[in-house]
Image (cartoon, rainbow, N blue to C red; front, side):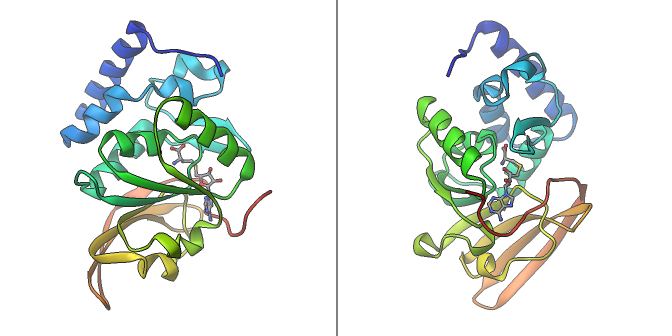
Length: 215
Ligand code: SAH
């Protein structure tokens, strides 16, 4: 793996942070994390020059790295506190995972495509991000490590996976882009054992959340 971080990259990141502020991201912990994570190292080398534009990009295996605004918006909705246990569904490039770890999350992340799982777990370790990586089907969550304070789905989910709801701590929340072709960004808070509250935050577009594992 090649690539390093330079002052030029830091400058570009600061510009991106300013752009996200203008677009309405206010949480300082989110903005600080975006200012720190070297996004250019998460893209295929041909796209390095685009790394700090507010756009989504292909990362191989037919998947994309989410747009920085989307990463920031989802991270902001999480209302993360230091040390909280977070489950991310859809490791992908690992960029969202790195942002959550910069924000102090104790992170568990699941990817269904073994190619991405291998590539990304290697990259994040090299960059010094120590997440708990799993190859598996996010619809099932990680029952062994439940409950979680927060769960973040980074693919478009056609329905609310019941297994994930029951892996939330009471008081915890699930952020889910909900819908088939188009999604509505949705936050579900588990008020207590059997009581959930759902709030919608507008339209978004993600690659689909699919079932099963691809070896
Ligand atoms: N968080 C990623 C976003 C990647 S796109 C990033 O920051 O780059 C969504 C990812 O979710 C893809 O890598 C896709 O393979 C994965 N995915 C889709 N359905 C899944 C499932 N059921 N379980 C785990 N991962 C899934």
